[in-house]
Length: 330
Image 1: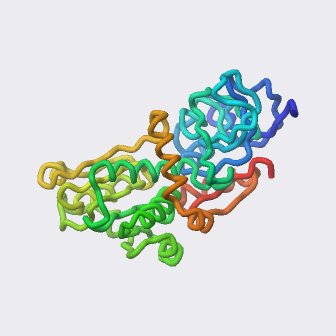
Image 2: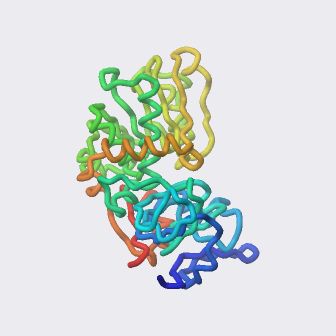
């Protein structure tokens, strides 16, 4: 085993925020029971925020960003894991408080790891990544609210993004009729291939709307926030369920209580970072069963570690379609 590894490192001096690839000694890794040899990571919206410094994601420097990774156990002081075990990790403060996945090695707490689904390669697990795992948490939330395909259409906002793309593929596999909201008409064929049955221009949802509108959607998976989420709530059917997991448009929610008190709409907050282990295991098991891998492969591109700093601003600007896997050894 090499005693050095390559990593993307964020540094800050005063107001200067830098991101560069460096060779580091294994001794530089933070404390943890398990040493993982990383093979793949991915690019998420939160990664874009951290790498560009657009939002205060990182709490201490230097920091290795990357909020998720897939790899194999190299060493473990916890008998729950043995060398060679295939694992994935997402959340738990990676890229915020603990070094993350844009590196060839990571040392982490044992309880943060989950087994990689046997049906997936490491690359496919990171094609799912935090975005796909979050999409499954959204689907699980609206299902537990009692949603069935017969109740009507499900709106997916930010449809061409990572969460949206995976959510569409899962919902279609489960028999739901999906309305995809996107501002990129050129992605319609791509989204139709994932399972979208109809489309709504994001401009229809992105501006201020009525506090309550015509009932249209049985459920919503929203990764956008702001006016988009407010309008989605206003158009959700009686007893409908809305899962909110992102803020691509904004962190505000300019809505009223009317959808809740007149239609009994339920708003589910979806947190992927600190979700309890049992829920994580359920979500990854469901992904292994309910996400068609051919559709996952169709939405995925692969890039080397050296391209991450170019991809970070691109994902914030909405210029990345689907999922981008990072091969940290390329």
